[in-house]
Length: 419
Image (cartoon, rainbow, N blue to C red; front, side, top):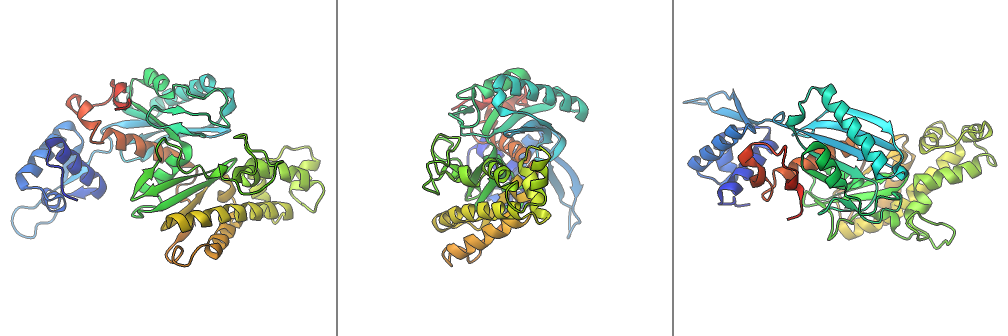
């Protein structure tokens, strides 16, 4: 791709290349980006002045002066990150490469509403900033994933089925006011897909689908190495595809027969509780007899111990999800299909069933080079993706010029506003 000839475009292109390469030289930058040596020198000098690039490592010379290597200053700033699920809140602090320097997981009920949950998040972030030793003024931005549809431009959840009280709530504005930094909000599965694409299994894969199977079911789509959000931010919501004609299978979205309503963790827990006491279920049956309330993790753990009901439920879920994904594989033809979430992490039943179903029902050409694998990042993928999202936005062509003259986006929350 030819370089942008504007000074800011060249600057961002050079910075992006240094970030991607890890270590590089001025000569490499000129060759890779098609820029003249004088232009590269000017842009590198500007990045050194901004504190975004460091020049410390010297390569071995092949004759003449040894070239000095350039490296991205991953510790030039830090970002606050959070992944809000239906029942848990995972929060952290990450550097500009997406590496997590501090994390904390705590119970949180999304149905408690935005005031209570975001107050908990704010308190957690304050503690993590103190514990990590990162000065508050070195926080450059914040990113959060929530378990529902998000209008990305405004950072507001829109009619989220499992988030009562969150519809159109100004999440961005509240957190920006609390920490005086730009804030971005997205669907949690989108962020897991972004993290997996950039730092996990999807590195170097241009076309990828990430599927999260947990209490609910959702997916994130990577197209040409970029997260595809769709026209309004609703892309990838496969949990609400109708898969059965069953009026009793009521989904949290208000419709019936949705994939999430028959294959998601909430549905499996309900069915497991009903079946465990009636059928041969050595693990789940004993738990129900003892009066315990079952959870998603109990089903995956029981399946690992050979519990017949648990294995049957997970197999059924995997087959329904696999049928749905086979349609998407035929339609989109990804090179990688990554499965994450609590229904996948604790056992191999779902993964193996999805593989068998997708490979069996999709067209041969669509699956010729398709890899189906478990997430490499696991439960921290959402935090990594949140960090990647924030850093990508800060260094984008539209936003970088807004804060680079001040050398820091801290104190400029308006940077994240729609443009």
